[in-house]
Length: 238
Image (cartoon, rainbow, N blue to C red; front, side, top):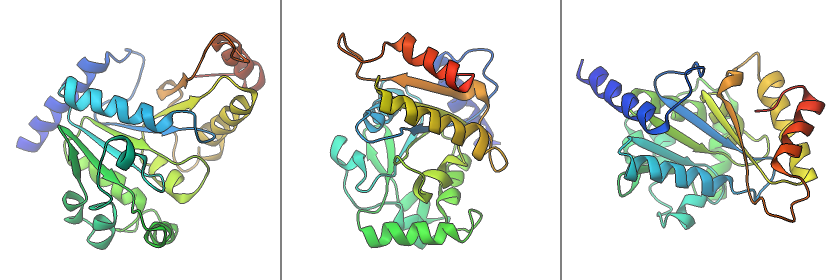
């Protein structure tokens, strides 16, 4: 009962802080996957900034999972390389708490810095997302710990460190720049989210969002042009 009360309080503060639209169907814990088609779009900066804003300024219990190699949060938020997600993989269950670092009120789990450990985690996850020491299980474990928001900073590309955590998300934010290359990459991500992953895991269309970053007067595409190109090419845009 105490756990449910704590979870309800956390979720209420999240809804109040973010002012979610009534049409958005997701309730409870928000597990938000931040995606980009290429590096340099500002995905990590956005995920970290929103996580910090929620936890520190809005008093929303939040967890940031920084899954690049090396984890961007170690540089941007001045976190340590250890402890990291390897603590959980070594001891699924009780290793979750040991993997956490804190930046003021924000809790953070970073990917292993060692490329061998990073690859080993992907290899273990490839055996099945339901395995106790898989990436999917790591993210799913956060659902039981009364977080209102879990923010996943996922590497660009379609490796296991991206796809398996994505299967545990209920919200997606695509971060792109106003370029033709990022337009094509965003189209690819929409196909991934709405078609290729549909049989395994479907994030509701109304829970997919897009941020057009680094827009300026000399941008190749305006925000409206970017949106309209997606609509014309794919039939829908977030």
